[in-house]
Image (tube, rainbow, N blue to C red; front, side, top):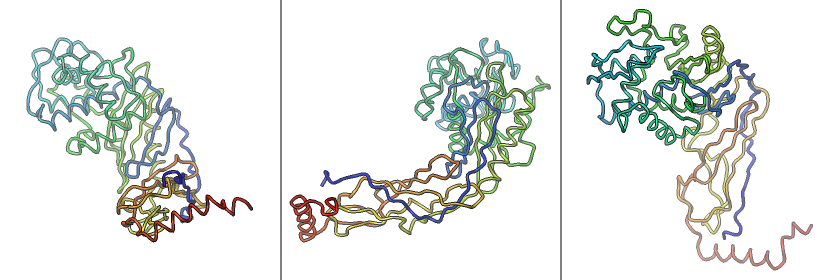
Length: 388
């Protein structure tokens, strides 16, 4: 009976204990840190504010290029021409000229390791819907929106300062996660420390990522710097089974960027621990069923539920199950029915879906008559509990 549906909250006594983590005190203008393994946001500062991303926006050019390789629109071995427009860019470049035809593989390594502004434009013009860098930038903006990056807008392919060229640190983290997850075959390129293209730029052959040599599991992704943006880094590190992705921007020097990035990685791995709080076979709560052969059904996670919590133990963590109930029968095993909402102190709220542990068919005639009779009786005499 639809009129009887209501939002139901069940407070759970799960065996979860945690102290609030000491928040990382970053001097970055904006920052975002996420544990990729569990999806736990560890730090968020001005995360959705659009800011100049500098060369960190080259990651979007790379993502589009990797999609083209996957779809067969590019191949690593094919060579692409260099236009006057591509050659005209200053800053960090591969020193390309219009006499060159450069392989896609070299261009990708030139973007990742050397941060080549010219290499970005060569890729952009090859994949642009209208053959121009501006057309490619419009395509990148559209593709970013499709990926859920709502605070990104591109005016060029390489992050060169331009009006309206903006990304949020949250969007950069989304992009980094997608690069790691969607293109594992290309992701090792981000850990390359050196690329010497044709001997042209001996002063520009080393990866600017300051974490790659430190032995802390860092293996990507991209630095950035302009006067307007300050110094930034989209980074990732893996230790054991855990991977952390982080974005920092607006720092005041390369030294500060290196110090802050290393500190973020160490804090992320040392101050949090994974805990399995529920398994896929054991219901953690019961939801009421309307007109069913049974009055309730167990609620289980999709798989073993492992979450990240601050490492120190002290107090209960609040956990609730929220659903609209009672739920109309029939119910099928695996049907999504509710959400588990966990609120660890010092961390953002965590929400995970819960599913029916088994089938519950519609009840027989007697069950339905008893249910309807109970409602009629309540309508006639009222709820005695409410009258007390």
